[in-house]
Length: 373
Image 1 (tube, rainbow, N blue to C red):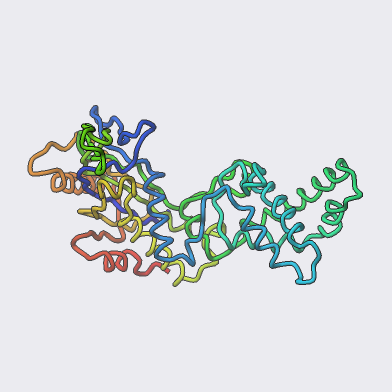
Image 2 (cartoon, rainbow, N blue to C red):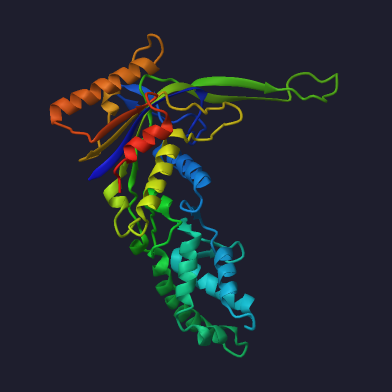
């Protein structure tokens, strides 16, 4: 397995990057003490959004249940301009395809029951395939006012079977699914459409013991009558301050295979990997972005290119860092020490070792991608 790995030390004062079910910062026990934690899913979404902003042509996936209107619009454009009742026909076809992908929930709302991770070009592939199938007579029977409801139900089932065939085309190679290849796709109703993600993310954990704190706040009612007293609103928020260790691993072999990005040129492939690495380093979850502003870039990034199994350095912090002159410097030192120990003990070899801030981010990425074709 050929890998690019990022080991990141990142400090955040006064934040709640990822909330639990009661609105408190997420946490975990590690090394016998409570740590601050951010779920991998939370940070992955931040990375996806930043990558899409940087390169929307390749990162075109969306997680959604609302696919019917997109399908309908694409179907309408496929019909000849002279086609009768094309809006009604497009709606029926869109419903059939959506049911094949995720089971219809509400036609009025335009959603299915299951969240789908899908791109616009994938939906277009499905529509194109549908138009290669013989559905005209089925559509006409469904729209025939003289047909009984039982007959229409039978014909609708036949149309749905055709739509299920068309839905299999979602896996055909297109150029706007780099994010789906990187992060993977789960389709509960059709396992053939599932895709293993080439990128691995740890749950970021604080390198030290962390306890949440409470922020009591009040808001002034600025036009409250003079005879009234007290605040217009009072409340509390939980937050913490923490220095995190983050791990991101990218399986280059998997990303290059036939189910992922083998249809990309070397230049396109490297562009995708470059965008992903940059987003993985810089993206930050946006929870409470206006009230706590947790946009702190990493203090240190160790970038590795090597062959073998993925390698976490989280156990560098199993014994929590004790505060001396802050947590960042000792966290970096412990992580480096752990990496050297693992290399010596298990004979781990690396093709490249680079770091930020020794290199700026652009040179850092270029070094990791050198001779990557």
